[in-house]
Amino acid sequence: MAVPIASLTANEIGQESIQNFLPIIILSVLIVAPSFAIGSSTLGHKVTKSTGKDIVEVSPFYGIIIALLTASLLLLASFTKGIPTSLVQLNGAEFIALSISKNGFIDI
Image (tube, rainbow, N blue to C red; front, side, top):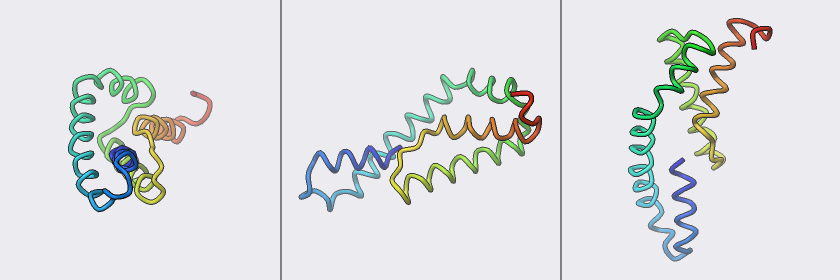
């Protein structure tokens, strides 16, 4: 999420400031990452409860696997192709994939 914000910011300032792109990325990460952490920790308990219990029961092992897959796909899409990818959509897709792998297509 921070890379597209940094890219948009660099485009707004113009080509003469392209040497300042690294500080823009660092500042974007320092602003966006804590915002995500605060938002998910204060407002995300309902979503976490429904995806962790109502869709499929998630053990700590599967939770770690889902977190690693989400982080890997998000970083891969953002850094290699510059595609802004939604963390929530990736997490939801991985919970659905876990549910399908455990229960099959019938329970969806």
